[in-house]
Structure formats: C-alpha cells, structure tokens
Amino acid sequence: MFDTLSDRLGGVFDRLRGRGALKEQDVRDAMREVRIALLEADVALPVVRRFIDSVTEAAVGHAVLRSVTPGQQVVKIVNDALVEMLGGEETPSLDLNAAPPVVIMMVGLQGSGKTTSTAKLAKLLKEKQGKKVLMASLDVNRPGAQEQLRVLGEQVSVSTLPIVEGQLPVDIATRALQSAKLQAIDVLLLDTAGRLHVDQGLMDEMKAVAAISKPRETLLVVDSLTGQDAVNVAQSFAGQVDLTGVILTRMDGDARGGAALSMRAVTGKPIKFAGIGEKMDAIEPFHPGRVASRILG
Ligand code: GDP
Image (cartoon, rainbow, N blue to C red; front, side):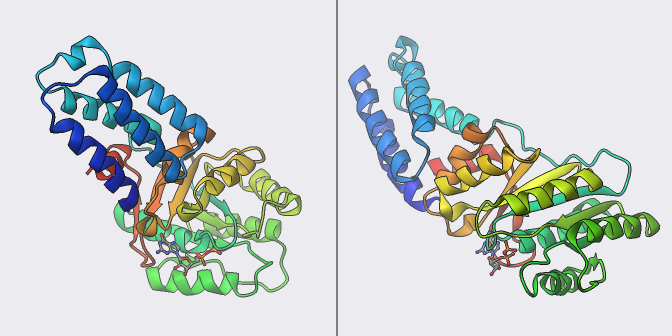
C-alpha cells in the first residue's frame, strides 16, 4: 500500500535524519522534493500547497533547527501533518445510535466495489459487533446485481432480502424496512444502484430511497486507484446526499495514495473504512495514524 509514495518520501527523510545540523535551506530543499512526490501521487494541488506551507513554517523555526536531532523533528512534523491530512488522530467509527433497524445506505459508481463492501461490512458488523444484519440490493439496473449480493450474503452468512423481480428501488427499500422490523434486525444495509457516471436520474432515485429509509449512515464507496477522480466523485455525491463517510476500496493495490490523502481535506468527509483485498474479511477501519506511519515507513 502506497509503496511508490513511501519510497519517495523515505529517501528524502533518510537524508534529513542522517544529518547532524540542518539549515533552513535544507528543509526547503526537502520540502520541494516532498511536493513533487505528493503531486506524483495524485494528491490535489491545494492540499499539497497547504501541507507544504504548514510543514515548512513549523520546521524552519529556530527551536527545530537548533535542536539536537533536527532531522527527526522535521519528520515528526511531517508525520503530524500527514495524520491531519488523512483525517486527524481519531479513527472514525460508524454511528449506529438510532432505534433499530439502523439503516446504512451504500452508494457509488459501478465497479467501485460497492456490493463487495456491503457484504464485507455486514460480516464485520455481525462478527465484530454482534449485530443482526439484513442486506438488500436496490440495484435493478445492472443484471445480476441482486443475485450477486445474495451469493455474497450466503458466503458471509448474512441474510438478504428475497428478490422480487420487477420491483422498483423505493418499493424494495420499503419492503426491506418492514422485513427488518419483523425480524428484529439491528442494522439494515441498502446497496443502491451503481452507475457508470454521476447521473441525475440515479441521484434522484437515491434521494427517494434516503427519504423513506432515513439512513443513519450514507457511505460512498470509491476506488482508491482512481486518485483525484475518486475525490471528484465524492464531491458530486456530497452535493446531492448527506454523505457521512467514505469507504476507499483497492487500497491493497494503490501505490500512490492520492485519493486517501486528498479525500478528507477536499470533501470534509471522513474515510471510515479501507478495502484491502477481494476476500470478505479484507476491510479495516481507516486509522489515519497508522496509514501515516505506513507512508513514512
Ligand atoms: P460494484 O459494481 O461497485 O458493486 O463492484 P463489486 O463489488 O462487484 O466489485 C468489483 C470488483 O472489485 C470485484 O472483483 C471485487 O472483488 C473487487 N474489489 C472490491 N473491493 C476490493 C478491494 O478492496 N481490493 C481488491 N483488490 N479488489 C476489490
């Protein structure tokens, strides 16, 4: 994860750490390299600028440059700024504080890993939090989407709403809510239709589903490999529904890290989970501190 970025930054900071004394110019030279590394990682330009400015300001202070280990101090400043950029010290959690069934609505573009993430999340809620979970697919556009969720449900031993051919998304959501109430379900996961691009018809459908199901969490699933595009997609969805968080998938294959590093700063939305593989347990809470340590090696 983030290997290319990590290698680039590792090289810069090894050189800094290895030196006894540092001058202001050394810090500025290092920051120029960091800037290039972040831009190559596809981090949004305003985010890079803010990051470099704040780190430079903190790092060229006399206290840092005159300290016994200036290189290490600079790396610490960079680490703290990275954690901030990734969302801060706290690991964001799911808000399930509502009368059951608590609804989690999953949204995103087709192919982002939405259906897989729905099943992964269901498994996690069942096994780690002891929740009774029901999943329902509202994707009537993509042939086989509802069946895909049913099969995944069997794999993770979480029940799915029986499929009724020809039913519309809002009606499926209504049926899912009724069924969840009857079965005393704790958490209902609604897998909404994926879309090829951000289109208004499907946005309206999603809003109608949100209006009747009143989701406590609306999670956007985006592919981290798409870099800044993932952030643009998040901006578009955030303009239409009240997104409460992001699930960033395929982080296992992302060498660059631009989506992870820009998401919070650009959209204000927290990354709540990272998808780290195809298996059903390949999902983990997104810990900014741990991700920053991984990047800095
Ligand atoms: P959807 O169209 O958004 O519902 O996408 P799917 O859930 O069908 O996922 C598309 C493909 O991406 C599938 O082959 C998944 O196994 C794969 N996938 C999803 N999440 C991850 C992830 O975190 N890592 C990897 N490596 N593959 C993933």
